[in-house]
Length: 331
Image (cartoon, rainbow, N blue to C red):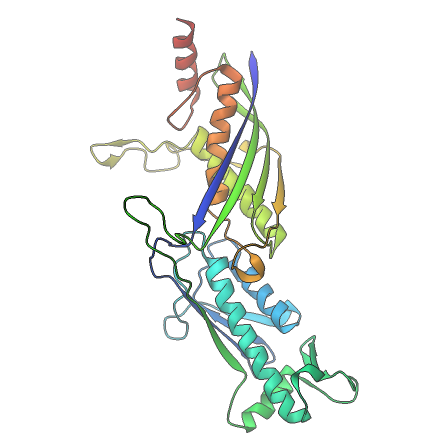
């Protein structure tokens, strides 16, 4: 026999190191002789898609096809600090550093083009990797690489560095309050539908709906992927993953004894991206990495409570725990 239940959760997540801890990111953007635009950043893409986001930001600022953007992998000899890929911070911090570098490079493009055209910034425009005059767009124009050659003759280059180093404030130890504890906050709500088999204790998740305030979705498909991936982790946290420690030793140190969700365990998901653009992130974007993992477990626990009337305060909610709780409830 199965019991149906629904549950919701809403979370608020302050991202970046925050609490007065120094945090910054540095990036470089340059127009190279091999007709690419090279981005140097030490930001580590561990699957969350920051490489794609960075390329899109540079493409947007310089008004050029993303195919021309190439990222140089992190190298301690040639890339500067971008901080860790943690605290849901890379889109916000490295995204801003890259945007600042691209904007600085764009200012150099306009400056040197103004010398070539003997004109002023408002009379010029960039499009598809070229700069030209409004009044004579077909008569006189330079590609970024043609302009780079002319800049080289002036003993300079089309390269720029940008950094992002926002201030956060250490909270008052008594009240926990500060002017700005974190750089920004991400909000997410999830609704979960479940069926609980009261004979076996198995929980089947039928459907998950998510809504996240992410400021601006620089890559909407990537954001949806993060929501789904993070939610899958939350399902594992809620129903399966159980690290058993005895005397300081993990006794289930491999995946045969530590169960994680597979594709067969993931229910249909619908995601809604709420774009508020209220943060100081690049184009208003916020970080969403960890917020996507947090809401699922409490929403599932609430759905199980709605289904069988038993409140669980420890995870994971395994079939054994459910059967034991139902038996105690009957007494």
